Every structure is written in C-alpha cells, then in structure tokens.
Amino acid sequence: MSIDYTERIPNNVDLSGDRRLRRALESWQPRFLQWWGEMGPALPTQDVYLRTAVDVGREGWAHFGHVALPEYRWGIFLAERDPDRRIAFGQHRGRPVWQQVPGEYRAELQRLIVVQGDTEPASVEQQRRLGLSAPSLYDLRNLFQVNVEEGRHLWAMVYLLHAYFGRDGRDEADAMLLRNSGSEDSPRILGAFNEETPDWLSFYMFTYFTDRDGKYQLGTLKESAFDPLSRTCEFMLKEEAHHMFVGTTGVDRVVERTAQLMREHDTDDIGRFGGIPLDVIQKYINFHYSVSLDLFGGETSTNVANYFTAGLKGRWQEERRRDDHLLTEAVATVQHVENGRIADLRLPALTALNADLRGEYIGDCATGVTRWNRILTGYGVDTPLYLPHVGFNRQVGAFSGHHVAPGGRLLDRAAWEAGRDRWLPTPGDKAHVLSLMRPVYEPGRIAAWVAPPRNGIDNRPLDYEYVHF
Ligand code: BYC
Ligand code: FE
Ligand code: FE
Image (cartoon, rainbow, N blue to C red; front, side, top):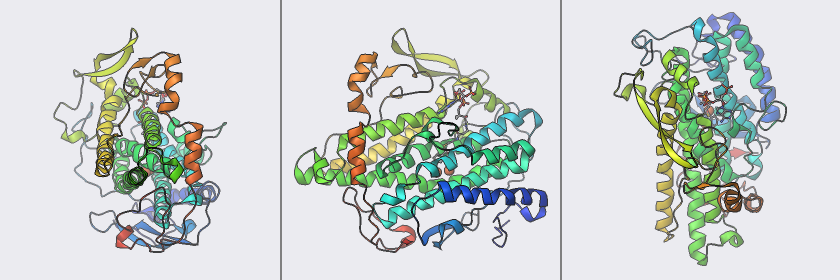
C-alpha cells in the first residue's frame, strides 16, 4: 500500500479504515507538536532541505525538498507485509507470525516498545540546542534530518501502542511526551539518553555509537514474531542508515582536521590552533562507546532469554545463523570479574544474548576506528585511535562497580581516580570543545575545527542553501 499524503497523518496502514484508531492518534498529534515546539530544535528556521518518506519499496522511497520543520509530515510507515512470514526462533518457531498481540506476552511486548519509543524523543531533546552552533548549513540540515526522523520513530512506536495495547498503550504514548532527557523527576528510561549532547563532537559520537545501538536493537526487533513490530522496525532501519552516516563521516572530518593541524604545526597540542586534540577525540570515543555498551543491558539476563524463547526479540540476522534457533542446549562465554581479575564465564547462551548482540555491535564499531586510523596515517600521524576494553567505565552489567582501564587492566579505586582525567573528557576538555562551537550559517562555509564533507546531500553542491532562516 502506498503512502496517503492527503491524510492528516500520512500512513500506509489504512488509518482511514479505522476511525477509532485514527481519532486516538489525531488527538495525540497536537500533543506531539506541542512537545516538538517546546523540546525540539531551539534554532528558529524558515525551512530545511529534508527527505520525507513517500514509499516503503526498494526504489525511491524518499523525496527531498525544503520544508518548514513544524510542517514536516511525520507519518506511520510499515514495510511491506510478507504473507508467508513465519516465526524464525524460539518455542513458536515455524508457526505463522502474529498479527495481534498474544495475551501472555502483552506486558513484555509493551515494555520493549516503550523502551524503544522512549529513546527516540530523548535524542531530539538531547540535541535540541545544537543548531545554535552548527559548523555549516550542511551539518545543520543533517541534524534536523536526524531529529525529524527520530520524531517519526516515536510515531512508529506510538502507532503500535495505540493500535495494539488499548488504554495502557494510550497512556504509555502520553507518557512518552512527559518524560524528558536529564529530568530529575521523570528522566528517560535508559542511561545514555539522559546524558548531554552539548557540542558537535558529542553529536557525531552519539550518532556513531548510540544510534548504532539503535540499529542493532531494531535489527533484533525486526526478527520479532509480532509482525507489525517487525515491519515497523524494518522501515526504521532504512532511515537509520543516514544517522550512522552522519556519525561516521562527522568523526572522519574531525579526525581529518585534527591530523591536518598536527601536521601543519608539527605538534599534538593543536587546541591553541583552534582544533580538537587527538587525545580529546579518544576521550570522547571512550565516553560514548562505554555509555552505549550499557544500552545492551547485562551480560546475563533472564529478560532477554525470555524474550527470545517467546519469539519477541531475536538475534542480529537470526535467519542467517546456523543453529537450532532455540538455544536450549547452547552455551556461551562472557567476561566477568572474579577473585579480583577478569575471567571467562561459561553460561547458557540464552541468558547471554545481550552479550551476543553487543559483540555484533562492537565488531561494527571497530570498522569506524579503522577508517579514522587510515585518515591519521594518511597525514603521517601514527598514534592510533582505539575502542577501550568492554569493562571500561561501565554502569550496567558484569563490570559495573568495578574499575577497568581502557587497556583492560582491573584497577583499584585510587588508580581509577588517578587515571580518569586521561581517559574521560575533563571539564577543561569539554570547555575547549564548547569554545570552538560557533555557528557558521553562510552557504559553503565551514567551521575551522572540522574538515568539509566530501559530497553534498542529494547531489547538491556544498554551497547549497540547505537551510533558510
Ligand atoms: N539504563 O536484564 P537486563 C535507539 C535495566 S537505541 C538504565 O540486563 P534487559 C536510538 C533493565 O531495564 C535502542 N537501565 O536488561 C539511538 C532491567 O530493569 P528491570 C533502544 C537499564 O531487559 C539513538 C535491569 O536494568 N532500544 O533506538 O535484558 C537515537 C536489568 O537489566 C539499562 C532498545 O533498547 C540502561 N542502559 O536489556 C535514537 C530495545 N540497561 O527489568 C534512538 C528495547 C538495562 O530490572 N529494549 N537496564 O526493571 C530492550 O531490549 C531491553 O530493555 C534492554 C535491556 C536491551 C534495554
Ligand atoms: Fe531512531
Ligand atoms: Fe537514529
């Protein structure tokens, strides 16, 4: 079904055929818009060159054009339904997927959808003020593209809550707009979404590391036996690719500019020349990576074992895995802390599924580091960037409550405190990065701490007016 743009809420779920649902969503819509006005982008603009989904098919799903932000057509788009789709894993493996929520899994499914949904508006809130210091119109446009799509991802989850979870679902949809990132009284659910994103290095790191958790979590929900959830996540993943791109190329460009300045001035101490020193970039990696690892939950989790067995949440690329897709006998190895050292722990693979997904994620994260190091060596800089040990700076799981150095050595508290300023951004590092954040709104111009992008958006030139004020 193609997308009907004549409706108040663009959709491909035949909203016009379900009056009650349409009414319910139409009464949520003004509350969403009010939230967007209060918690969305703080920088006033006239319009922004954005892509909008027009189809969910393989070719040409997006349309580009200048849009006033509050008039963006947030809608509800599910990937095509596969009428033959069957459950790929867990105890119901082989049976047809569900078009309704089974009563026995209602609470768990609702919880997964609420957690997923909560992250989307959280990121918009975290990025609210970044427009005020954008390094170029190109970057400003990318920020807003990410923001409107995260807003649409909230719509995606709110649709599921309204359509399949009755009164409770509607209450949860309302609560999505009441919790706020960093709020004392009603914070967002997951840790990383209550951290600040005060500067553009943080934004690139967030879209590289934290949006990438989104990619992997959505990948597991795409496997879900609950077909509307699966189809929703499949389409969200399409949009997510651009968020990864913003992160990867954003960090590329910071690393490139840093390497240029190091070479030009023959020093590591490039802060004086308006750059971001390499060791500060490493500290930002350490922070965003470790906070994002926390998003995978504990290494041992009965929650995830139950989700898998029930068919609610699969593994990354479940259907490509060559095993029984039940994992009742399988074992896995995770690391934990035992007698004052880091040791392997053998345990049922089912309870280690958070660590399994995290492993896929870590492998993907490493590809960016390889890219950044290639840029550095291209400029003759031979200090490589790296991902810290999985136990570094962790608040969730087997390493929480322990102190692990980036290299993987277990430390006592004193040694951790002594090393901390070398490993995580200090107030001074943050103040320096923040001091570089001055807006550049002239078409084609770019801030001095970051290299220009290689290409424009949608084959537009770099000096295109991506944003009008
Ligand atoms: N912060 O059994 P465990 C995205 C809680 S990002 C605070 O190990 P489980 C995006 C946990 O809830 C993707 N609390 O956890 C990115 C549990 O609480 P209860 C978001 C945490 O359930 C950028 C307890 O600790 N999607 O889309 O196996 C921009 C024990 O934990 C945290 C999803 O996460 C934390 N970090 O796994 C925009 C998918 N971690 O039960 C968007 C849906 C754990 O004791 N969520 N806890 O009250 C899930 O699949 C799971 O809930 C989790 C946790 C993977 C998050
Ligand atoms: Fe998202
Ligand atoms: Fe995203």
